[in-house]
Image (cartoon, rainbow over all chains, first blue to last red; front, side, top):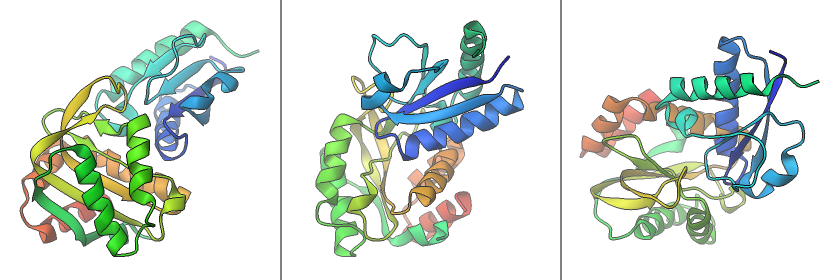
Length: 99
Length: 154
C-alpha cells in the first residue's frame, strides 16, 4: 500500500488527538502500513478533508462527510485496540493509494 | 517537568460524594484554584468544554472521566483526582448522547502542550490495566493512591 493520510479528530484538536495520532503511527508501522497523520478539532473537519484517506475520531463527526470514519477511543483507553487497528487497516486497503 | 510533580497528594480526594458531574468539576477546580494551579476562569472553561465535548471514558467495571480546559487557564501543572463513593453520570466522549457511571475523575490542568500529550498518553495507557484502575478506586489512603499512580505513569 502507498502512504495513507489519516485525519485524527478530537474535541479541541490538541492533546487527545495527538495521543491518538502517535499511537496510530506506532501501531500501523508495526503492521508495515505507512501513514501520515494530521489533526484537527471536530469543528474544522470539513475544511481538512483534502487527500485524506480515513478519519479516526474520538468524538462524533458530521454525517455528511465523504471520507470513511472510524470512531473509537481504543487508542486512548487501550480497550479494543486490536479490533480498531483491524477496522482501520481494512478501510485503508479499500481506499487504495494516493497518487 | 516529571510526572511525579503533576501528581500531588494534596490534590487527591478519595471516596467523595457529589450529586452531579458539575459538582465534582467545581470542587476539584476550586482545590486547584486555592493552590494557584489554575486561574479563576478555569472552572467555567472546563464546564463549558465538558458540555460541548464530554470526557467520560467507558472502561468496563470502573469508568473514568478526564475533564480539562485549554492551557491558557492554567498557571502551573497539576492534576486533581476524586474517587466517587457513588458513581456519577458523565456523557461519553465518543457518543455524547449516552451517559456512563463514572467512578474516578481526573481533572487535568497542564500548561505545556508537549507535556500535556506525554502526560495524557501515559495516564490513558494506565486505563487499559483493569487491576490498576480497580486498585486505585478501592484505596482510602491518599498516600498509597499517589504512590500507585506515580509508579504507573512514570
